[in-house]
Image (cartoon, rainbow, N blue to C red):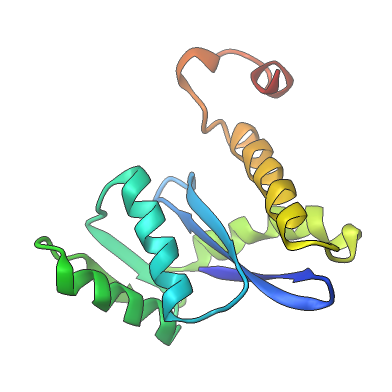
Length: 145
């Protein structure tokens, strides 16, 4: 799914993916909301996390077109579900990002926005207990340090 972020007075698009357990899979800030941007996001998420079995998207034509482009060149097919109610998990996950960004009243620079959003996403992943492994049993502050 994507959400809107204001950068230098213009709306930019923060693509985000969340798995079934609510953990953040990947995110990408793009200047446009079109097939090329959606394809770039899906390729990045697949390269880092592997090919998913199912993808739930909203009624966005750009996301569907990007997944069709991936289907054309991949041997395994991804089951695509277009249902706005199954997409509620990520819509709720956007709230944490929006809550941190709203008081900022937007960003002045695209690259600064990217860096700050990376920090916000990492802090959100720590808060959700997503980092596991050697950080198990540590407080969020200890995990950060």
